[in-house]
Image 1 (cartoon, rainbow, N blue to C red):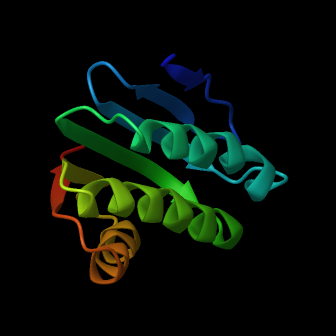
Image 2 (tube, rainbow, N blue to C red):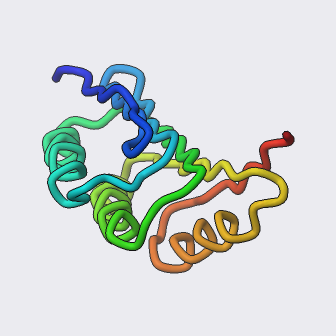
Length: 126
């Protein structure tokens, strides 16, 4: 299975999904014109990955900002990861947030309360 990556822009995050290493990263800002269109290939890739995931899937989310429509799409990504986790594979979500960004910490905690996967809250010191 091929790795999947998207170069970040001022409106879209950098995406780097690697099936061999099991490392999945989304970093930057997520305010695309069309969130569903942007996130669909990510969800589709995870659907394929579900068939043969790495023993450990390590997810790094480091968003400085995302809009409301992105939040629903990010939840869809987490739901695919949850399916991988429920099928008996190890999945860890590392939610990175800047030390003074209470909103981003709360967003991670909100996702953590919905998705049944271990989350690690990681504070980034500025």
